[in-house]
Image 1 (cartoon, rainbow, N blue to C red):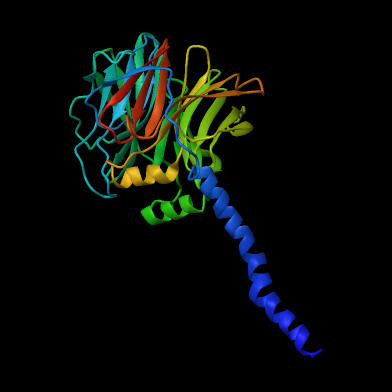
Image 2 (image 1 turned 90 degrees about the horizontal axis):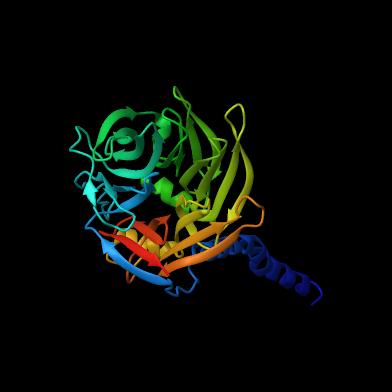
Length: 355
């Protein structure tokens, strides 16, 4: 009997206790990951105001606002299955009230599937940069916009542009962009997403060369430049953060702080008061279903971040929808009382007027 008791205890330890010790951290990590994706978060539609649709326009994933108040949208008809081909997308202009929607790019001599969009204005001219996902690889396209037509100026090509997501300009020649994944195959990207392993980064272009500046982001997404190019803001979608980084004299990026959000951030924008507006996804699992079948609803949220430079930021959920009215909101542009929302897959832009 005395010999059997230790033997039973040993069996219990190796068959029950030890597996629990080994598996508990793994179970906890993936449970926390589900919480961060919003899998258990209730979606309660809210917006204090009225909304109307502008369109049709396929997949207006990013929208930028010019000093005149005119909006520029990058739109593409994104496929439901990776590898499927669709017709080329385009850049559009529209008013902050949704009026005057018109295409501003002509047919281009190359595939044009615009994703993120950046702008810089100087001397009455607006320069536009668009991430372009060609079937042969990603590029960045530069345009000159005269108020009615965006004329193609230049194509940037570099291995670091693979998986580029969004772009933000410093001046007529320099810009930053996010690269959401370092790996290039579809299954490698999905595996890193499921374990929330950060291979995304921020890349700079100084007018002559590209350089990776800040690595380890779990799906790097929207990006902004402010302070005359002295500060960079970037969205880290899978960890629900917006990074605020200072630009050092040697061009390197030094993290100042990271703002933790209740939703997964996509694109970022500033309003006239300097507040940050975030197009966000409150449930990434639902967004994944929406990506695989565009008719499946994709919940959306718009967040406002005030006083973000004070060290005591204020977060407000201004808009939320369960996918009934609009799915997969990826960007929010605030202009006066108007809030203009673009999406990844829907065929409209939602123009909302806040009370």
